[in-house]
Image (cartoon, rainbow, N blue to C red; front, side, top):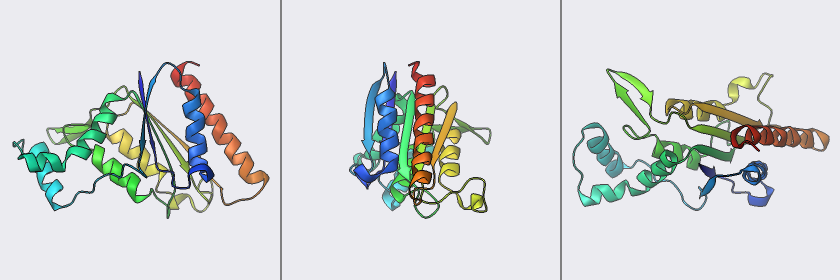
Length: 206
């Protein structure tokens, strides 16, 4: 069994998302662990050269030049990390109601036609069946069960991305209200830690 931990936690030890990811990591049993830090290993963007190479290879099924192959190397490496994992856990903060740019770039890097998803007779289907994904997000505000629910575009988008790739079990922990003080914030973190432990116990049979 293999677990891929993907993190974008630029606040490091002050990051609530990192605290929850570390708690999950400490609960993992009987699994190889691979860590991808998006603050250090920054995903490539689809510039004109990469999008051209991607279309010619993945859509038109054409052979690429060495230069074109090289342009897709990092995307292919990150995609292979997802393909080879049984469990993918991604942790990041909410930025401006959605996911940070590096996280979106990671999803764009690994959601490649013919590698993590494909089409048949005009219908889309995922290739990552029998895999599990956990999304851990911390936010300053509270977005569930109030008037701001329609402003939340981080967890909702991340779940769609994993489901589109065919992940069989997609869970999310939205650690809300981190701009609150005192007991309110502590209570939210504790609930998220409890959820982390519950999912880890279920997935790893602890």
